[in-house]
Image (cartoon, rainbow, N blue to C red; front, side, top):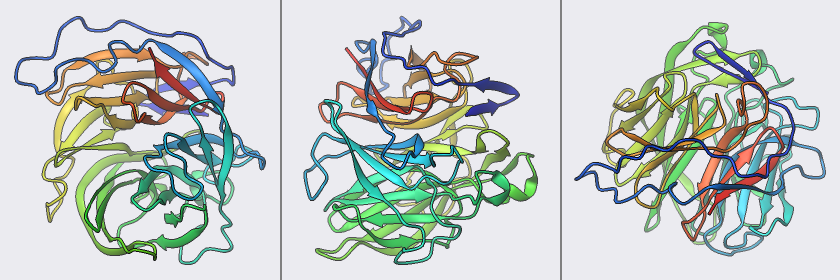
Length: 378
């Protein structure tokens, strides 16, 4: 896989990385009043391989990452779910599997989704993306941005697939703004869940490789039920105008990672090479555009996956150089670590989804260059 952003072109090779990799960290502390007491990445120095994410059918190119908080069905507390975007022939937008990995390195197939046997509409079929979350009750929601042959020319709108804790698809959400769901986070309260989903196919294919500023962030409100899968209640566009473009080797580039801190939703604007913030994301009734620009350039290099650290700082992984960057909500980039050094330039194209573990002292991340789940720890 190759990743290109702002004329930067990079390639990766499949060479395992299980050694300690780190680069310089800003020595300055977070400013007073920032609400952040320390750098989360400060003590984390070691990168280790956890397990291969390639299941029996040969799917590869791991994208989404989610930590299981409660054991239910085939989901076991502390394990990590990973979604695969490519099939065994390495065609993008054709992966159909979710793999469950234990912190000790045991990997097993959680689900293999049959595109011809879905309970509802999913335009184009199945190609699992970085959009992956686990809801109360063990409901797994994963995005699909499918292609017919791995090319952007055949990409279609896709859907969100809802699986039960046994790995069976029980429901799909499509249409009403869902158009190439690329990443996702969620917040639940009572019997309600809000999904925050980025979409990257709004006029992208028709633009033929040109950048179009039509990427969106949707808030999809769900009603949860005791036994039945959650039902879709409402959809609101809360973010719009993000850059998106097709790419001959990365398929599509657009707004990717999202993370919620309080009622502020942070977005990794990959094409803009920046992090933005959408205020009042849980309650707003209209689009905030791209939101407020939090941080741009410097150590950011095509930010993709995004997660909120325990202290409230923003973690992003770069598609352009294999680094993870920690940014305070005020915008200052306070730490950076090298997670992957494969390829030329080193680490480019290797990183997508990431998630903080339950003990809040490690970061799991997928490594596309090796088809492994890796971990950054002390």
